[in-house]
Amino acid sequence: MPNTLEHESDTMIYLDNAATSWPKPESVYQTMDEFLRRKGGNPGRSSHSMAVAARETVEETRLLIARLINASEAERVIFTLNCTDALNLGLKGLLRPGDHVLTSCIGHNSVVRPLRKLEQQGVKVTRLPPCPEAGVMSARDIEEAITKETKLVVVTHASNVTGVIQPIEEYGVVARKYNLIFMVDAAQTAGKYPLDVQAGNIDLLAFSGHKGLLGPPGTGVLYVGNRVDLDSLREGGTGSYSELEEQPATLPYRYESGTVNSVGISGLGAGLKYIFGEGLERIHAHEQYLIDRLIEGLANIPKVTLYPAKDGFKQAPILSFNIEGYEPGEVGAILDQAFDIKVRTGLHCAPAAHKTLGTYPLGTIRLSPGYFNTAKEIDLTLHALGKIAKAGKLSRQNRESSLEPVKRLR
Ligand SMILES: Cc1ncc(COP(=O)(O)O)c(C=O)c1O
Image 1 (tube, rainbow, N blue to C red):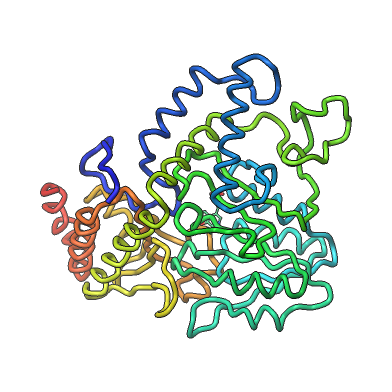
Image 2: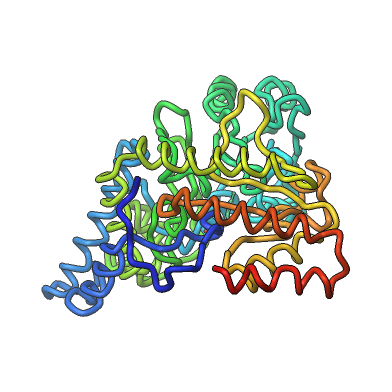
């Protein structure tokens, strides 16, 4: 069990960690405060002590990320604004008209939309559906869809809708066999599952710093492997090679133009240290316990339809479901207003995944526990959902009055 943290409110329950993790470890708040007060120079831009201290902090976080994903060189870790920014850099820096891309139908809009834009510019995209019996794309389907023009396989590690973990190790083997670039969106798994870019044949790995890595918003990472030659999307000051009018080719500067989010990166470093201190196994075990408890509890509530990972497939701490008689948004509003429970509802920026699941256009209710949630919070949420499901048969007015006493009880 994680250390108990002091929350702003002792009754609010936050179950939206797939959107962004909350709370952060105390050390993240403290490190960012300390950084801004004492080390707030511009990293790499000057030689005075404040700038040097800022640079050391940024480079220390880069090393921690390299260790997390087993990157051979830290400079291959590029800091970005978020996972979306990292995915855009990887996709648009790599693909040219005529190139062919293979991807899955359960991706997030941060992959879907850049690919749509690239399609308009002449890139060809094949979207492979998951096998119905597995709920994930099969490596054999990837192999069969490869053409002479195929350059890239890009997949989401864990779906942010169902939590299903796709077998990226198998995809990586196929990609390497055909000498393709392999890119993984690990937004929902970084900090929760082991990621090894060398063993996994991963050439481009994108993830957020503000989700499982417990850093602040405004942080993300793209790992760029040595088989990839990406174009930069932004050119500008890097603090190095200032005599050059062209963007320096040296990593990480080639892709890090302008002042980086140094305070955010300092917080990300504190988040990573916290994760290394606790250990991925311990974090995973606790979150797995919470998600299993949720699945078991929800399966016992009449009128609930669950969309978990299929048997035999791993489930990230993300769970989608619906309650008969309610639109997902209604349940989210009741949970928030009557029970002070924060969840996400709707399409979760992944309409294609909902089309595959059959929950388009209204989507689902999504619960995503994190390391700081407790079993008690899960039980309170199940209790609230039981009440909501039971009240579902009533008219809206009766439903509201039947839920009102629950609010006072909490
Ligand atoms: C699977 C997946 N990819 C990408 C993203 C985008 O992450 P960010 O908000 O850091 O840009 C998300 C965000 O929820 C996600 O779930």
